[in-house]
Image 1 (cartoon, helix red, strand yellow):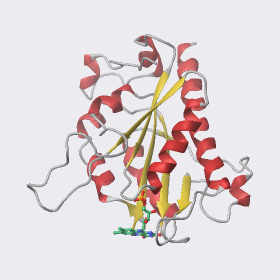
Image 2 (cartoon, rainbow, N blue to C red; image 1 turned 90 degrees about the horizontal axis):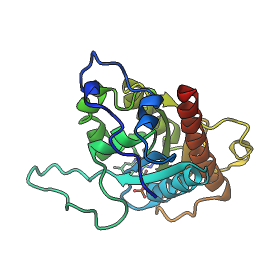
Image 3 (cartoon, protein in one colour; image 1 turned 30 degrees about the vertical axis):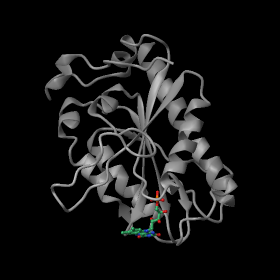
Amino acid sequence: MAKIKHLLPDHHLSREAPLPTCSDMIQDMHNDSLTILVLYYSRHGATRKLAELIAQGIESVPGCDARLRTVPAISPVCEASAPAIPETGAPYVEVEDLHDCAALAIGSPTRFGNMAAPMKYFWDNTSAAWLSGALCGKPACLFTATGSMHGGQESTLLSMMLPLLHHGMLLLGLPYTEADLMLTETGGSPYGASHFAGSDGKRAISAEEKRLCLALGRRLATTALQLARGKND
Ligand SMILES: Cc1cc2nc3c(=O)[nH]c(=O)nc-3n(C[C@H](O)[C@H](O)[C@H](O)COP(=O)(O)O)c2cc1C
């Protein structure tokens, strides 16, 4: 299915310019589908599985396409560079993906209670997108995986909210109308989707964790559609 392209006119490239609205976004659409970016970092695959479930939830909403992207690993050796195309998983994110998307889900493994450095490094290089307001007014949600049960899922989800708030995004969590939030004995929180992968990273995603990922993807997509339609009325 065709994706939304060139959503931001050139005049949005100055800080004084009016911020982009959903009307701007849908004005240039060549079809009626919204592109929703699912951006993740995953070293051992647990966070990637969550990203794929969230994408599934997004695509269950008619009129929404998920675009899966990842960020490169980083290295203290400055000569080291990532291959142009990742060996596994989604393609690397590009600045255009931030402009193109109508909504964003970001996910990272928990690293000492925080997002992993490659995801933080990505956001530390988004000044141009911040200046242009590329993400301002768009909805966003978060997901993470941990090795231990109480190892910082919630703090990681909260840490990933900070750059998104600076970008002017509208943050979505999971409401307690999702029964699985009360039933889960592993991941899933009002701050976003999560998974307790275990110390060896091999625990299966539980039924509750899975349903909460799907619900979060659906919620993000539905909200993006409602915003687009509301701005266009
Ligand atoms: C440097 C480092 C720090 C970590 N810190 C935590 C932590 O604070 N809490 C926790 O539960 N797990 C921690 N872990 C485990 C990862 O969060 C866990 O293995 C996660 O599921 C990996 O996701 P991935 O499979 O997407 O790479 C850490 C792992 C590494 C390598």
